[in-house]
Image (cartoon, rainbow, N blue to C red; front, top):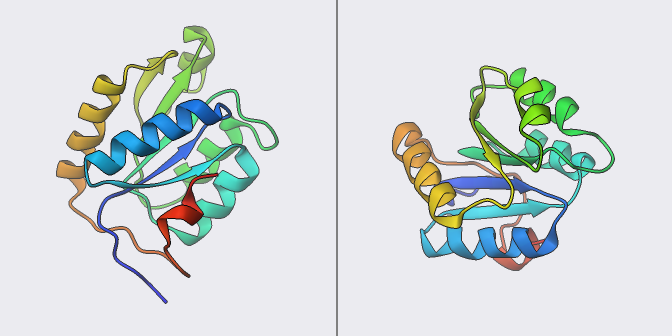
Amino acid sequence: MSADLGPRVLIADADPAWRQRLFTRLLDLDVFADCVANGDDALRKLIDIRYTLVVLDLGLCGVDAAQVLAHIARMPSRPVVLASASDEAARALEVDIVQMVLRKPVDLVQISELVRNCVRATRRPATSVGGDDARDHLA
């Protein structure tokens, strides 16, 4: 069963405090987010859901960010924001789908503006398979 939640972002980041802050900020912008802590969970989410934007930490455990990016690159257009403590590592992974590379710690105002711009540019609703209780999406 598909549900239209409007703009939807996947936050794939190893830092639980950052995931919570970004999740809350996006809800304030009326943008729904799913949060995952590792690359394996990110790939599972990407199979089922079409996201407006993916925020991807380069320090993911399990399946690494390069593998997640390779998977995203084979799918219909989904812009990606890379977040990294290392500028060099982030630049090494830049591909066409990477909208921006942000240095950690990421400024919430900066990423909020980027999300707003992506939402305006795409104007395509996200679709999902399964239930969509907001409490189920914050890992």
